[in-house]
Each structure stands twice: as structure tokens, then as C-alpha cells.
Length: 121
Ligand SMILES: [Zn+2]
Image 1 (tube, rainbow, N blue to C red):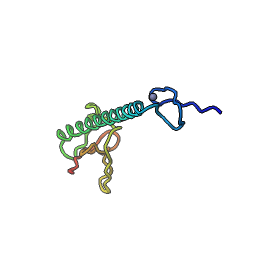
Image 2: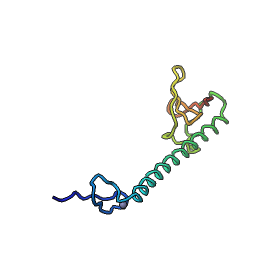
Image 3: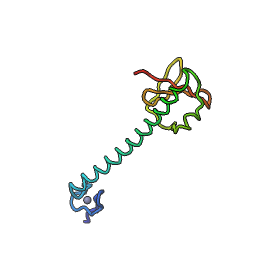
Image 4: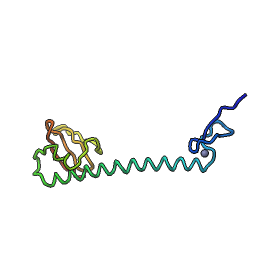
């Protein structure tokens, strides 16, 4: 009876022996896990940079607009704000939902304006 053929998922060499093995040796095993962790860390780093950039934009605008004043949303976009990236959302029964980047949050007012607030943590 023929043994099912398997490949090392790191170097693609044929694996001889036990069919539940994924790697031909421990070198391939650690090589594979290192690249996995490397790309995960890269992804986390990229998203962290985007979140920090968003926070910086909110902080800049917050500092230059009087409190409670509505800000045209294009002001955020002009500074490179990206709506897709935020850390969390905070719901207030009275004030509605704020989308946050760390300690700053914004709430859409209509379709073209936002109100920015800072949460004191
Ligand atoms: Zn291998």
C-alpha cells in the first residue's frame, strides 16, 4: 500500500515517515513560525501607525476648534484621516455613539460634519 505523500509547509520538500508531520525538521518549524510572527507583527505595526495618525489628526483639529463646534469632515480627510481605522466606540445614551482613536473620539453630525471630543481616561 502506498503512503500518502506530504510536503514540508516551509521548504516544500517531501516528508518521509509520519503523515501528521508538517515540517521536515525543527529548522523548518522555527523558520515557518518566525515568518508567521514577522508578518503578524508587521500588520500590527502598520495598523498602529494608522491609528496614531488618526489620533494626531483628531488632536490637531480638536486643539484648533472651539469646543462643541461642528467640524467639516473634509478637514479630517485633508489631514489624512482614515475612517476605517479606530480603536473602539463609546455609546452615550444622551450624546450618541463616538468612534474613537485612543482618547479622542468623533461623532458624525449629518453626513458632512463631525464633533470631536477628548475622553479623559
Ligand atoms: Zn522543510
